[in-house]
Length: 238
Image 1: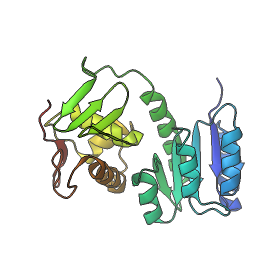
Image 2: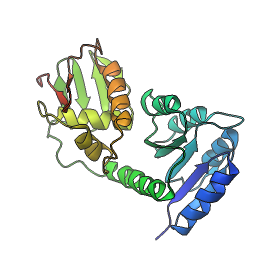
Image 3: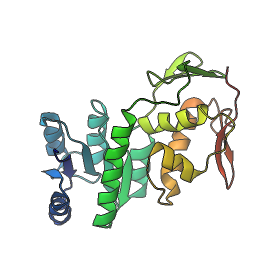
Image 4: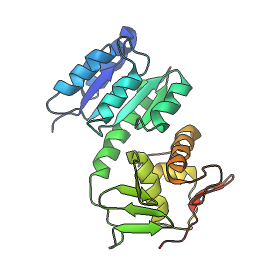
């Protein structure tokens, strides 16, 4: 069985020299990049493609955020962010940039490995057929149309671009209208992983999802919050 290929983008050599060899001992094939331009070059020239990118946000020559945008323009490969800046993490996860997960520095190698395995497993999972989708692949909720086959969403006839995780959350809610989901349940379903108790990931994705779907995100029509419990889709399907 071929080992999974990882691109490790980290300008701090001490971190790279700690993380890379550890992951190689775990059976991964690791390619190293130490600045943003090198990361983009490595990514564009890679054959076969990488299974996951580990990306620091604070990089020389070109920022990690720019690298993430470049990657997302051509690929849905899982991207795990490493950062000590929570504000940058918010942007990477929630502002349409499309990161899949993050770890704050400092981090443990055991947790990093667990996150890598989970991200690759989720990526493989999302490519498999969805058994529970209704025969009618287009679900209508008020002014929204959600196409479960093409992963396209329209709001009042206008296409809405969602990240894979945003669509995963929406899919969970629209296929279970009226059902309340806790943050742990949403994370377990959409991320296909154990919930680590970090509410930031769910909060950021939910906020961005509402900004894209709701006429007034502060008074949502579709995705309702039950404070202290979770979220549900309130609008009736058409």
